[in-house]
Each structure stands twice: as C-alpha cells, then as structure tokens.
Image (cartoon, rainbow, N blue to C red; front, side, top):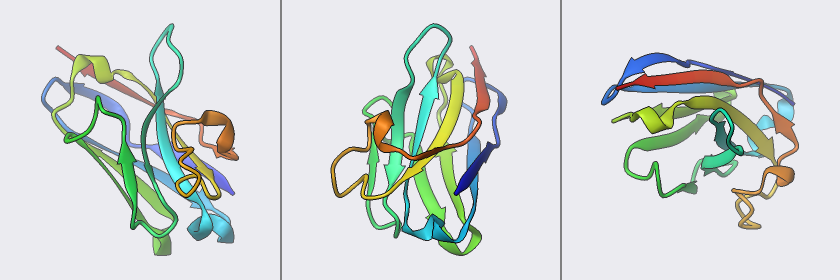
Length: 126
C-alpha cells in the first residue's frame, strides 16, 4: 500500500481545509487509517484515526469538534476536514495506514502504522 497526502495550503485562522490521503493497492479497505502532524521542532503527534470500515473514529482532544475524518473505500481515499483552524494547527500532516489499529486501541502509536504518506504542509496565519 502506498499513501499520498494532499490538500494542504495557507489559510487564515478560522478558515477550513480538506486533506486527502489517496492509497494505491487492493488492501487499502482492510487498513485502519490515521492522520498525524508534525510542527517544526516538535514530535509527530496523533490527530485522528478511522477504522477500515469507517464505522469508528477517534480524535485528539485538541482537534475534537473541529476536525472530521472520513473515508471512501471505493475511491481508496481518506479525508480530514479541518474547520475553525488555529495558528497552532500549523504543521506537516501525514496519513498512515495499518491493520487492527483501532481494535488494539493503538491509534496514537506511530510504530503501529505500517505505511506512511509523504506529508502535506498546512499553514494557518493569525
């Protein structure tokens, strides 16, 4: 499975962006998928995750209520809708995929993910 993240850009505080993670490979629909982000000088941190069917989602507290993760297995795509963006959301955003992430409650553990996209830059100006 190969993942490609896109949709980043520059937006003013309070604005919205929609990130996409497009996968290649037939096994994508069996993979749980997560979004992480990394700001300059900081550790890569968990943002949101969704299970293989789309029936279960989880969010970091700092984005809960503002971000929504969804997936379309027919299009092999996972989206991250980001609303009410804040300057502190500025980071490179990465999508990642792995098996049994949600069932093992491992959504925020980077090493549990087998595949990573290349990242897309999100910059929120104040």
